[in-house]
Image 1 (cartoon, rainbow, N blue to C red):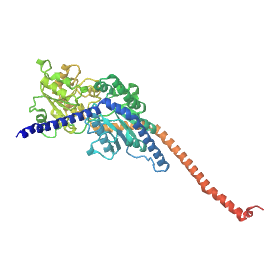
Image 2 (image 1 turned 60 degrees about the vertical axis):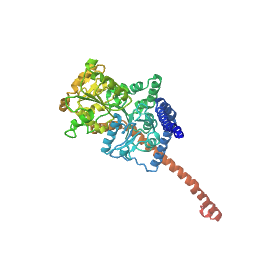
Image 3 (image 1 turned 90 degrees about the vertical axis):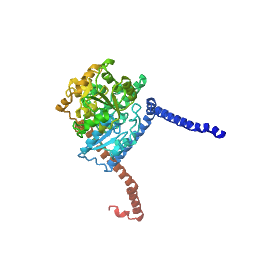
Image 4 (image 1 turned 180 degrees about the horizontal axis):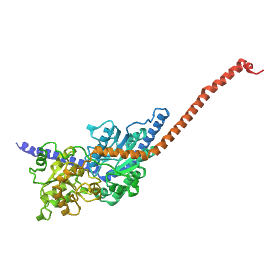
Length: 527
């Protein structure tokens, strides 16, 4: 009995020690993951490995060009014209990433392929279930330290270098932000391939928002400009952005002649008609916890991070007794990100009726828009704001701040009463009140902007890109053809000389010696 009692404490300590070991291992793994994804570690890794791998990419490109030269000399590469366009899209942004650039790029590709064009895509990610032989998620990448679900391509890689050097392209679409722009633009300039550069992120604002150490921010922005932005301005045939005001601010008004507004749209599923007769009631009850029409639901759809300014909407829903504007109803927030825990705590402290929906699949968003009474964005970091368009397409009034981007897009389309100054909570509250009663306006003035329409306009901009570069390509084509002919003549001359020296001349000499030895040379002497 005494021995049994003595053994009990030892046996009870074993699970505790095992649990402590597992907890330490978990904490250590988390620490390693945090170090690996810290922006300073990734910055050092990129700077260390960027140039050696870039050198390898250039070697592969010129090897492909050499083999292409041999194919032309042999008559294998005909370079015949075709009816469709051969388009190469290079991007860090594709689904399963859920932000606007990924959705936009995937929609362009799908619509252009439906037109019969050959669209090859190089990216850092891809939906495995939808991957085709035209998709190449092979760009060497690191985790985005500010959005861990995304990856940043830090080098072009061997496969992309081969495709750029060995294949014929009518136009290359380079989606920014990108760290491989210098390589892509330089080799396309060498081959006189037109490049369409689209810029989608305000790097200055994001850099200073996410990184607090100013020297590191300035160094990072300088390196980005050096290997990304400045090559686009120097070698890009056309530079575009979702709005012209952002294009001028980001690229410079001095490039006005080469600036374009990249067309935007959304999917056909974003429409005001519900899928079922009871959809609105079912979604309001299941997702918002609302079972009547008198309770107004305000919806926000965005990434939950500091630059989006999500918390600025809370004072509008705080009661007037507590110093707020006293908007009644439910605030529903769809999205995820580093600020989610902070926003949940703040909502609890303010005792607000806020529903955090988390990440909502893109295909489920139309039901949310149709079930909500009003959509609100507080973000000033948008270069277009696809969620605002999605809401309006579903018949949900969109409340937006006054800023250059939204002014350019929506001034002529939506009432000014749905707009507000970002500094004024009272104006925000008034805009939300007007928006929650504004569905009739959208019924009378519907907005229709689909990705099919956007892709058609984008193809027109590609044609502009091609036409601007046609003289350069014609010059290169004529020069290459002339040099190919000269090289063929030179090779044939060298080969003929070697054959004469190796076979024909020695044969003549041997024949002459035979004649001398046979004594018949006199027969050929004139009398």
